[in-house]
Length: 234
Ligand SMILES: Nc1ncnc2c1ncn2[C@@H]1O[C@H](COP(=O)(O)OP(=O)(O)O)[C@@H](O)[C@H]1O
Ligand SMILES: [Mg+2]
Image (spheres, rainbow, N blue to C red):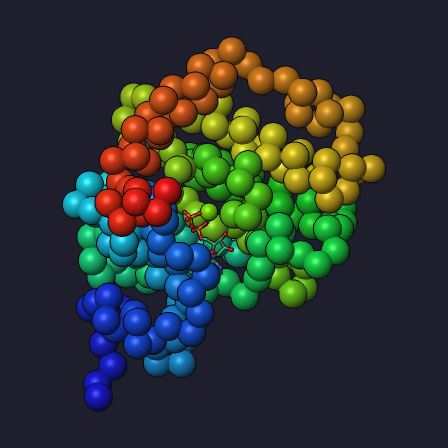
């Protein structure tokens, strides 16, 4: 059988090429799978599984945003490249040989890790982008050589996208930096400086409003994207 190309993959191809299901689709969340094609590993994020039409529409929007964000930060080491978007609600990205910091056996990270993570996040910011979801610590990965990597750009914001994004960008970049402090407080609290401790304790009024707004938008969106079968199971 001839191998499909990255940009031609269907759900059936992904089923056939799956090495591991990394996360099952649930409510508005995509299914995340590791696949292997032509000797190369990749990660497929698919919002088309276990959902209704609304989830596909939302997934199309989120997949497009994530593809645009990954293109903006392309070439930064330890950030995966986007390989294709074979369906509007599906994206295929490079597989990074790393696991989430939350899956580490021993929750310990050293100063070098945090210095590198800070540089990585500064590089993202230097491209006019905020990641926006680093507080979910499973989006921060660690390689076998204890290097940081970052995934999941679905919530990121870029300069030049729209006026609202321009307003939110600085706050979200602050939030990214706070996420590093949060990780440090859990994995290496002795490294926290006084300044970082202050940063952890303080949220500006604008940011609180932004978070509140996001919460009110997310709740009905999640509920609309939940399929009837998932609703029945609770
Ligand atoms: N390119 C990648 N390489 C290796 N692991 C990845 C990659 N992308 C995602 N993962 C793993 O899969 C998990 C879920 O993917 P993510 O993009 O965060 O989906 P979600 O938007 O549902 O949170 C991540 O927390 C990470 O552990
Ligand atoms: Mg994630």
